[in-house]
Length: 292
Length: 336
View 1: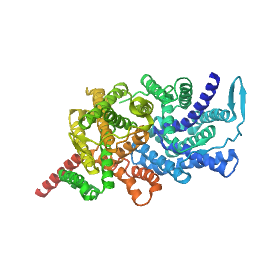
View 2: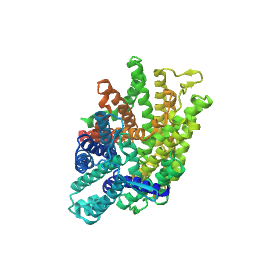
View 3: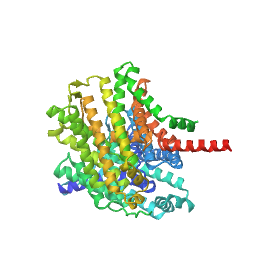
View 4: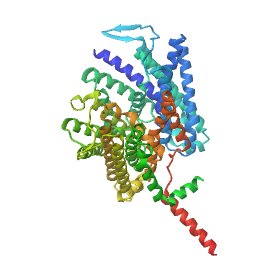
């Protein structure tokens, strides 16, 4: 029982972590809560479902195509809508409203095209599972967890070991200074959106396969969970995003397993508020000192 | 062109306001007492109150809130439960709604207002979710997901607000009351302190402005006004359920505030009215299915065209001063 809960908790945590890294990447660079991410999450899953289940393509190929397609849309959103707002001196709140507009449009377009009923997402591993010591691990759970680890490693190398990553961190510290140092800030931000959106699409697809279904009502809850785990772990910190996602996933699984299913989210949010009261920058975030 | 218009508006501000109020008063007559149209007016009015109160929180103190629907819902449930269980009606349910929402605002503010901007945003969002889940699960109090049905129409000492038009005037009166409150607070000592601390919190606190106390006051008043809007909604619609007060509604209220222009009373009302009317307009031209899609696209385009909001950064008093200086300058030149 405990072991099974632990496995389920880790899987749920991994899905949250996957969704959060994309959100956190953009949040770290622009300090923008990108609520279109929730829509890209669903869009990616629909893309993959259509290619894989309806058109019968190979799972890996449909996943790759879905990621690329959604990523390009995310980058287009930045270039077409957010960059002009930034150049006009608009605030982050204005950009946030813009992403909300995009999110609403995409989610409702999906409803218009596919209907609002829940869709089935087939298991690419044919329901295979491992059994040991009274616990069951399905292949898709393993796949989810492994994918989370791979994405984390790749993103960590990208952010902490490459020139692009250094540019991202520079912009997040001081965009003006970064530009003065010759960093092409607009291109770096565009790439950040491309990568962040791909992460959202990836997690959407993986989660839909793990749950076996997908629907558009996930939009709000995905956005809320992403935002919450990003802040819980520490703003703009990749390990923080994973930690935040893991904690939320574990909490939810264990609270619904042992305390109450109805109140699982109350626990998560109450703990989030408590953590913020004692560590305002999140668990792994660095406190910035306000200078005059 | 736009500059000229703003100058004209600044010059005749009182008249413009008067004409707009007159139009709002005559609106049911103009629409020919069409129930459907007046109903849109009532909802626009309720959203105007919500946006005005959000404006106080976000526009003046700079707390970007993603949880305003929580206070709206608390007010609606306070009024709904009192009416359903105890049969209470208008002056009492309105006051109770404001007190309940205000107290929750005080509670949330006391514990979390020391956090800085972006963390407060997630706190308001979490608060809204917690309230929504509690409303769903505290079935003995709220009837859970079923919602509270058959809330009686507002009844003020025997006068029953049983038609859309009567409710419209009730809501309009409350909009004017909210405008009055926000205007008075913002032009008082508290208001000046609040604006000072929004512009530069550090500078304000070093001028011995008690940042926390002023923020808390604005936060409380704002949540109380949102509660009033909730009570109006509960009595008007007669049915409330937890999902009418979630993330989606919070976003909608924030969009209205940003679109109209933060820190501007006129902008708030304009944003609320236009975003309430827009979906109905799309419905009436036969785009029912694509309504939400177009709404989203327009929202994104509008912030793109004017990131500050339509009436953001327009300061009539400043405009008047500039115009009068310019006039004085021209006068001197003519004399010389």
